[in-house]
Length: 202
Length: 301
Image (cartoon, rainbow over all chains, first blue to last red; front, side, top):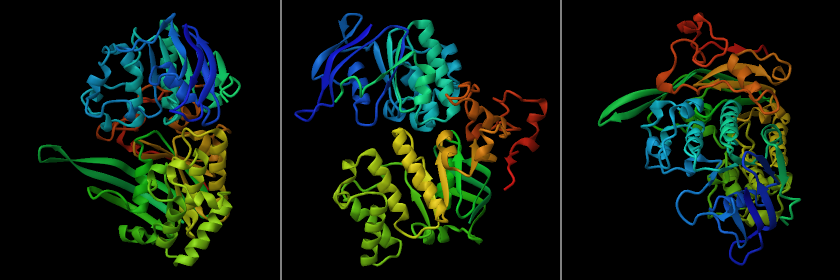
């Protein structure tokens, strides 16, 4: 289980962005997270994946807190892949940062072998997002937070990436949190969804 | 109002050392826009959507060679004419507030746009007030800096920069991704309104759903060329014809959510025949014929 207990977050002494958030994601579960802009969806994603420390409350993965260093079992995929990868690394190195994904996975995502020797700026946004997805689909990842993962992509690439991620999640019993503005997408991919507005965010 | 025929854009790039190579990013691309019409340009990233906008505005980099015909109101659109017309007759609504000056209050930025568009200072001020009023931006917003704007306010300021001058053609580049549905609808309605006033509007987007909400016609780009120009109602009515257009439509989450595998070919490795032949579910042996390379479906007006 990925559990957030009584989570609250604020920057410095400013007003709370999130307060009194309780949530639990089971392995193999696909959970949507929706709310209007400014309700802290992205902040919650960053808390769950360890990018930010909660001001109050705690996050547990299988009864243990997130590791302070090393590979985090909760991985976050952003809307803009060009901001998530090292611009000075070639794609091959980016993919292999944890462990090189196997050929079948790369093929299923439509990753050409010719891309591996290029730099991030030499791929289009859709191509680079496939790389960002491929590099976190490894056994060390137990939960995946997809924050507007396909908002920048055309409908075909969106469906292609989601099909792949959902298949992988099902076969590896991965828990998924889907943050999106798109009601149709949440309805299509999620088992259940959480409305942050009703969860006592503000 | 605007017609683009057979547009090709080739970049000269350094390959290795001093060796140069040519990369053709757009080939034989067609598009036309009438006054009072919203034409959506839809395609994956890398299909040439933004390059087309840059070509129309005359802001391509120096290493780009352009061939083909572009005409605006009947006259050829040369780089010199583009420079004279942009901001006055042709305006861009940029993608994000990243295009604004972060250190200048937004009211002054929009005023500056109006002055560059040819209005004297007092008239520019009046135009800013009128435009902000029109989009429900209170006078207090004029004194805000870009980072202080909410997502919805930012969209309205960006639309203001384009319409503060009496422009005839508006190009909106990806105005919707990542926005709350209410803000998306509001932004799209502003574009529709501009068309109702008689302006031509080009809506560049990867979001086919957003496009269909307001467009009269939809041009689908793939691998740097136009593959289909359809009426917006052709999509829900099942009258779209190119296999890629059909694939795009079917892959929406509210339709079948079934993608075609693979990815758009890169400009230096295009298939010999039909550009979609390496992914097409209905590919036939004829598809390899060079004659089909730039085949397109165009709906009658």
